Length: 189
Ligand SMILES: Cc1cc2nc3c(=O)[nH]c(=O)nc-3n(C[C@H](O)[C@H](O)[C@H](O)COP(=O)(O)O)c2cc1C
Image (cartoon, rainbow, N blue to C red; front, side, top):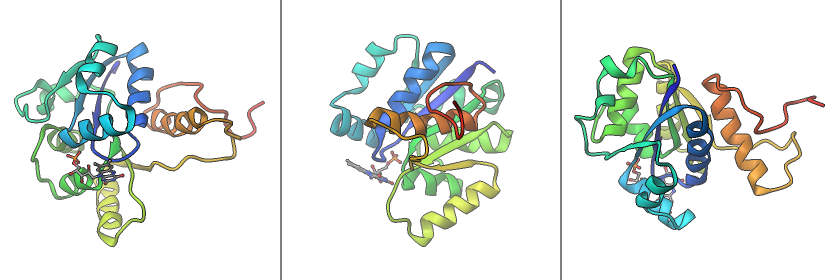
């Protein structure tokens, strides 16, 4: 289980996905899918394109969201992965997965993760939530996904934006059992 699949969708907070990619790719084999909307937000919020990511993370294999024939689209492959992480997760991807509609490779890998009981973590970002968002989160929780809101804590006394980002990314890693020192735990010296 030293392999992870990271999906970046078009929610705000693409930095969470970027930081997760940094941390995981230092220690594990990582494959990634950045949705078309995810690429728009990547440009908007970090000023980077998908080619920048490919250059910065040469060990990471990137799949096109339209590539429904990618190896990870099959349960026969995905069962050997430690987890599928959707960081950040848009409410649109959330809704597609909650309804079992596969319009792209990200929806498909989430569906496969659920049916094969591979850990699925979805870092949802929207504010406020509508009843539909909340129902979709409940539906996916009941189906086995781990829903994490992109909401940093303050009990670790963050001193910078980086500290707040690392808190959220640390919680994502906690959810999949990856050890890290990204944030100071409660009552930790
Ligand atoms: C700059 C920007 C920020 C956005 N932020 C959010 C967000 O925080 N949450 C969300 O659910 N959608 C957000 N959207 C809208 C999604 O990108 C849009 O619903 C898109 O269809 C999602 O597609 P995807 O799930 O395939 O990535 C944002 C769009 C843009 C351009």
